[in-house]
Length: 286
Image (tube, rainbow, N blue to C red; front, side, top):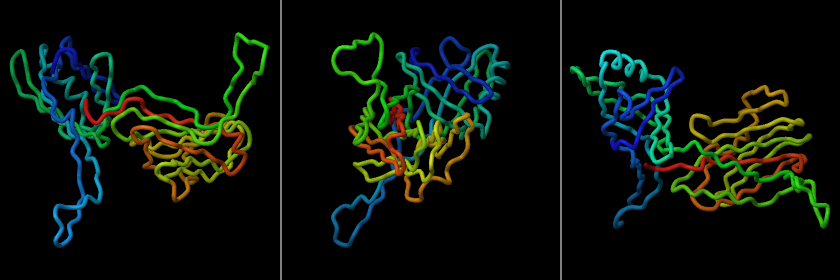
């Protein structure tokens, strides 16, 4: 790899950096820029070619080759300890002021070749969700009460302390792939039964629950975080999956380009603020 690209591997137990300034260096990575796609096809008698009935993107496998420098014995132990089997980690590439990460597990822990002064290692990482993601997050209000009053204040003309927004909301996805998201429903007063509807696809998320003042409901379609969380007014968290309607789609994603959403609620929709959190950077390869 070029010297301007560095990597890090982080678990709940610590972090290991791979760079030209550290004793750990990654010299080669396969599969960082591409993904494998399963294509499902149908053929009929007399048909020329095939009809595509569906597609799915496979998980990403990253074979990695690198080296360990002096003191090799100490650093060898450090590498083995930092990438243990069956422990999830985050593998991050840092380049040009940007950072892109994958949630991974070791498919093969480091295999180290003995040597004096310099040792070489090979390992494989598996990412069930294959797309690289950035840490940046786009937080957008879809519906609710927007504060309008701010300083400096000009008393001349028309002005409002706040304004309620509702109806269709537009969410732009500038990535080249579909992106998972979080939607947050916040109750300013008694309300309930909120629904997020994707106008383009017809998919929706519906929460069959009355909400008390100050309660938040967080629904995530992000792999590894997928589910429903209820946050009580006192900050207590609980699993809210039982309130998710059976026809809700936790595989919903924001498609590339412009997406149209509609937010409604069965009880006092004017008391619910709805926000969508979409990762700003998601790429099929880097």
